[in-house]
Amino acid sequence: MGPAGVKPRTSSSHCPGPHSWAVADPLGDLIAERVHGEVRRLTAEDGSAEG
Image 1 (tube, one colour):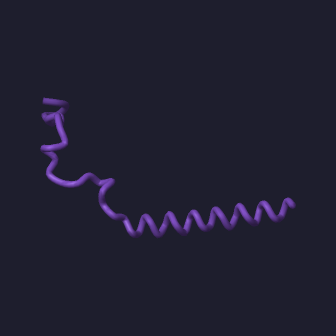
Image 2 (spheres, rainbow, N blue to C red):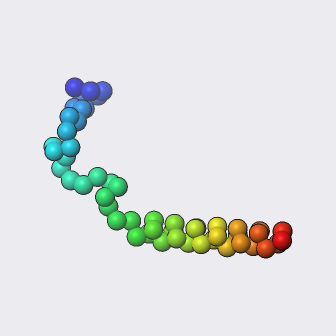
C-alpha cells in the first residue's frame, strides 16, 4: 500500500477509463484560440509601432 492506503498502479491495463488528457475540452480550446489571437494582434501592433 502507498500513502494513506492508496494502492500504487502497476500497469495501465487496470485503468477503468481514459485519462483526463484524452477528454475533449471545447471551452478550453475556444479560450486558447482567443488568447492566441489576441497575442498575435498585440504582437503585430507592437511590431508596426516600432517600425
